[in-house]
Length: 138
Image (cartoon, rainbow, N blue to C red; front, side, top):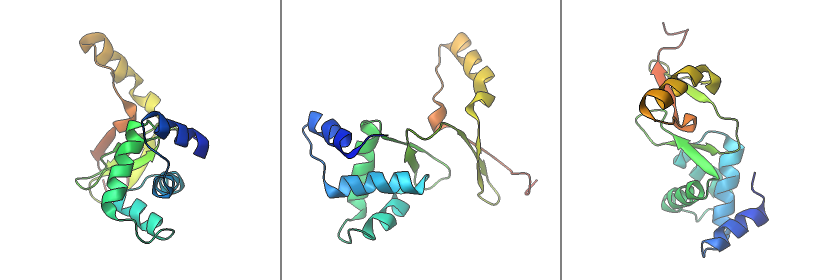
């Protein structure tokens, strides 16, 4: 997990500076676990009322470029962001009740190996979401 000084250095290396808004967005993503830009925005405006949603989207994109956060699409709506240091997992999304469960990525090791061997394709587990029906809805 990048500290404030590490984040400042990452930004400085790109000719940018650490702003309170950038720090608030990163802190919100880490605190919320999985959050849409709108949820991050709601958390940030509790501490800085003047931050608009466009700033949130731009900051999330920057933090992803810096490899501090990543996103996954869990529905047709906005992406869900989480800290890259969070343990990797696969998302199981129920199309009926919208429940999201986490699954150990080792479950897809066989598929990942097969894709690599047969197609030279390296699967990125951090962006995997599988859709179907949960146990309660089947």
